[in-house]
Length: 168
Image (cartoon, rainbow, N blue to C red):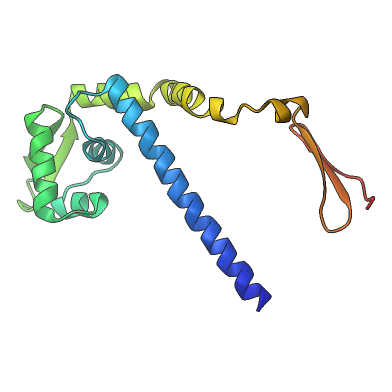
C-alpha cells in the first residue's frame, strides 16, 4: 500500500514539474518575443516557426498535430505567417497534398535572436525574471551549504561536495 502511495506522489510531483516547466517556458517565450519578435507574432506562431526551422514539416497535418489544432486552423496559421513574410509555402513536386514550408530571412533573424548566441538572451531573461525571487538573506548566510539528517546519518551538502558523516 505504501508503494502505491509513493508512486502516486511521484506521479503528482512529475506532473507538477511538467506544468511548472511549461509555464516557465511560456513566460520566457513571451518575453523573448516582446524583445525581438514582430509585434504581431504570437507564441503559437513562434512555435510554428521553430518547427519549420528544426524539421521538414511538409504536411498540414504535421503542423496541426504539433500545434494541437485542426488542419484548417493550421492552414490558416501557415497562411498568416506567409502573409507576414515569415514563411514561404510551396506545393511539393511529388505530392500536391504535401507542402514545403521554409523560413524567410526575417523569420531566421527572429529565431536567431531568441535562441542564437548560445542562449544569451534567454539566460539574461532567466536571470532578470527568476533569480530575484530566489534571493534569500537566510540562505545566503548558509554559504551554499546545509546539513540534514536522512534516515539516521547526517549529510552535508554544498555547491561543491556532498559528504555523508555516517553519524546520527
